Length: 495
Ligand code: NAD
Image (cartoon, rainbow, N blue to C red; front, top):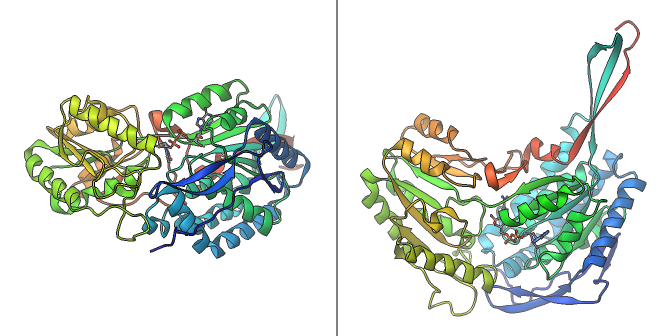
């Protein structure tokens, strides 16, 4: 168990090296979604704070050595890693309390995993070819040496969601800073501490020059972000969140032609082929409810062959009926509450639509009677779902699995790809080569074959189609935060 009863967190912004309240003096409450209780007040930044943060980041990029001094960057980011590493047990209850994140997840991706992985991004300082010479080349009769340099983009606005807030904050600010950019991080309204804590440690425990990292929290989901995405002093927007907001950001960034890097929603398919070991694959089928299903890459569509449909549905029904969920401080629960009342209404609305459009609701579908406090939704299993139904096409972001029958392998691939999203997927078969072949035909950025996991700091992650543009993690993810300059020099004598 982790104690979220007496948890506190940092309530101040970080602007130009200073931890301070919002210019207006306004604050807003941070709410624990498992208890529906206010756990603290945080600064409610407005457009004037966003302006100040952008000005500071611009100045730090243009007027300090940050962009040029790789040793300084390595030094400061190592300090930040050491500070976060030392504060794991302070952070853990904060993330559980404000995100409703099951504590077990904080020992992995939600906290410890991403603190560990942060070192990989810092080590990219030694992986990138910062300067490379191409062979001597003749153009217009002039023999030249061409030197290709990697340079930071400038000011990066990082905008993040609430589902894996700490991990996504680090996934953006560490590579962006290591690459030599300066950053304005805009946290999701519901999870401010996962950003402000990083801001406090950066200010108090590192030698980061003022303005290199700025952290903003705001009750209004859009007001601060709209300033960042429209400001000509911002060179890049690195965004993780919904596809709808991603489109808005891209449109807004077009005016000043900013680079946009977008990690968006998903509706991923798990294709269970007819020769798969069904009890092994579907016995853990309720894992889609981890963290209340609030994960972009969760496989929320399960595609079962008609030849083994009843057997598969029965296994899933049992998995959903015996799934343990509730209080996120209990390590036995991998599913806690949804983030807020609005999100719960949204998910319940999708469940209603599913029933109205004719899908069969087999398990769950409502608010659990034994959890009257907290924004919980029962683990919910829909079967006999038409691939054209709303619940088969839209991202629900709740603990809801839809089961869709298919005729044969080609039909399964067609249904899986018939989506505006393309983030992830899974394939299961007794024949590894067959599963791999199917995986190569999915139009998604990642695929898990027979339970193999694709995630890691060195593995590029991102979406096809409306699931995003660009890749996070891996050397490809690091390169997103760099641009390329080619310099022509006279060819060396004798070359
Ligand atoms: P959201 O799109 O509503 O908000 C994300 C962030 O954008 C928040 O900080 C929000 O305040 C900000 N924002 C909202 N309107 C804005 C605007 N007009 N301009 C600038 N910023 C604005 O997403 P959410 O509800 O917080 O998170 C859930 C979504 O995130 C899901 O769709 C999920 O799939 C997606 N997600 C994607 C990934 C990925 O890596 N692909 C990872 C996690 C979550």
